[in-house]
Length: 103
Image (cartoon, rainbow, N blue to C red; front, side):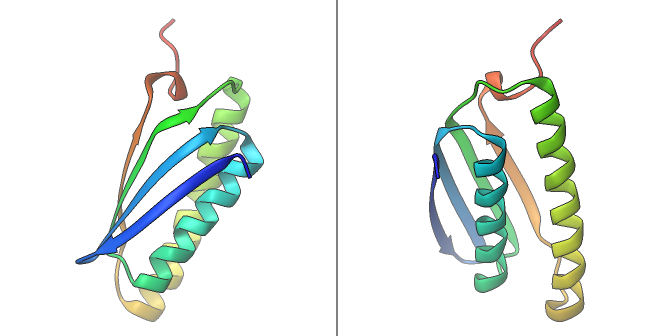
């Protein structure tokens, strides 16, 4: 996998530092791993720092990843709410070139 994640859990907060080269499939796998850690540690908050992820993706990949992440969060939060009675609050920090470029 070309995206590496270092995860640290403390006091309900899962901090994830990601680095590497962005690819849609690797990003999906990394996201699933992060959500697995959320469930494992019963994290109530996530701080994802993706400033060290390099991107060479197209707008369609960005859309597909956003759709995937939304579906995964909805699916996982529904499971977590049922079993753990909690809702995960997420904060993502990414580089400007991972976001939509100015037109």
